Length: 254
Ligand code: SF4
Ligand code: F3S
Ligand code: FES
Image 1 (cartoon, helix red, strand yellow):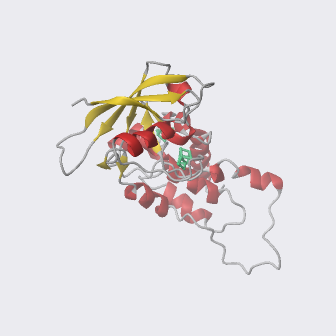
Image 2 (image 1 turned 30 degrees about the vertical axis):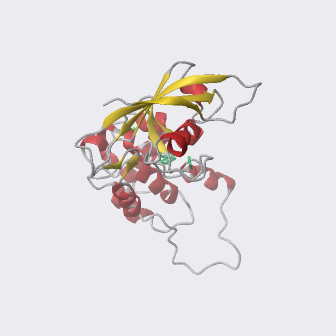
Image 3 (image 1 turned 90 degrees about the vertical axis):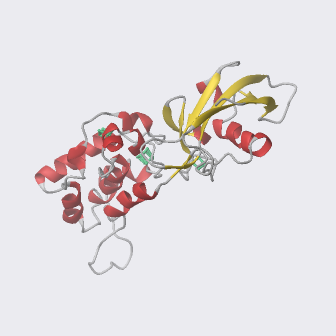
């Protein structure tokens, strides 16, 4: 079903900033009414410098209050607004309209794939966070605490610099074809989180985490498809980090 709403503006109207006309196609699903998902099209006026999240917020606030999706920080920090925008996983708050559509163009918005859709763009994140919990995502060190902090060299800190940038947005895991066909794969996000602790010289649970990575739900499922790396809004070189974890598993040490 396609439904078209009259154009309204996603940005405060200013005489100096040109507005562009957009069609925003949203894949909608209401479990109480729909047997399957359907596209609904909204005509929206926006500035090229608006974020896609501004546009979607506008649709919710002024056109379709029942539209359901997650968002919080609006600044690429909380990781809650991952969506499939024009066929690619992105954070709606970090995606500018001008990067995905020209005036008169169409933006498509769908829920991320591989997780159950609860309503519209809202998916069940429980399996994703179960995988996160499975890698023991917390610092483990039973040695007596030093008088001050546990010291790391710059080089040691550098080894976990990329993986500690992860915001758990799920853009990577839900773009991975291996995860789509087998949800038991822990997925790239969980491996990045495991990397963060495996390569932390202050942590003492390296062998336990390498054991988890060596299970049949772990790193060996990765077939270096690279979708995850392309999808990451934090520019984390995920596939490279997965290869580092594979090597650590093979050699029994980080
Ligand atoms: Fe998101 Fe990147 Fe973390 Fe994956 S590795 S969850 S894409 S921030
Ligand atoms: Fe999947 Fe990324 Fe590996 S997309 S197959 S986890 S390189
Ligand atoms: Fe927080 Fe986009 S709303 S990352």
